[in-house]
Image (cartoon, rainbow, N blue to C red; front, side, top):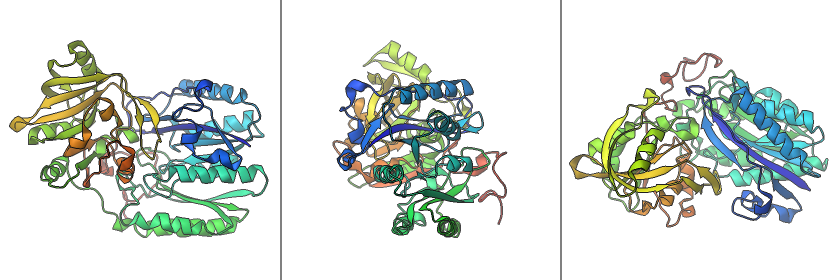
Length: 491
């Protein structure tokens, strides 16, 4: 049995100022056994008599919505790739569930095109934890599931389950039926965590629910509050084998479980200065990891925020690394100077002052690279990222301190240390590591053995910083979200 695999995970942040773009790259036929092939996507699946066929190089990005013209081009390219395949029995779409095409669900548009063009193809969907899929999606395919852990450290296991269920559906062994329960609960990405109360019970609870032979898969999608859309909020999806009533009851119970614990959520409250003060007192063997939650590129922020840069320089943080500042203008200046030269320039904050203003800095260019590297995280599994020309700057701070700062041309998920290592930074020597991530860096922390040599944070601190991914939802003016919505409105 041959099952195609397409991964298009773009998170559309409607508060971003500019449209994003997506580029579809067909999987190279002469690279079928290289890093990132079907074996790394899902190890061992072919031994079960199922061939997982990767069709395009994974697309994992975040930013503003996509324009219709760009999306139409992507659909046509994907249709061409699928038409060139012989005897595909099924297709798995790995999506964010938050892709917007000028206000419309990109996943729905994509699925409609596939069903239209390839009506005999069985399609299953693996969605990110933030998914906010419209109900029409489930009318086109009921086989939709996502992670049990937030962030999705169980991505590989959930993908394996989806492959098995899709194969059973193709063989007519099951008839999947999806039931949904929604709550207009807006959970910032920074609190979507199953490693601490009140949601630490969810993985075990959901696994227990799936022990029922009539229940094929169950997922709680906490949603994406940075997309101002009508379907914003939490969605519980229960996929049963022709047991719709059981699905409805189960979905309602799980939605109530989350709703009843909403007041127990510990919201991040520390400022970037407070987190740095804590980290600078670090006497443990591992570094303190600080997450710049307001400028998290994993959720569509531009990555040019300067709150953390300013605080680290002003407080004189030592043995510290900041990854990263997105600033193509600064990169042009750095490229003209070259490696090993002193440099003075304004860094960050060039286009969107919601994340801070440019900061005058002075230092030395330590390294320049093309910015291509592998993202070794449970969320990616060696996915090749391209941040564009990138540089490692050693910048002078107060009290004779020196701060290592990575500068890139384009935003990528700054949730692990692959780019820092690619630039030659000895990350294992750092006492403070600042990443522009709201929560997904926790996935790397849980499996730090993926990095060599391993870096195991002694403590993780989430900083509430300004920007379009801040946990402070009062920062946003919602127009399309259904009201009342918690925590925006009183209940």
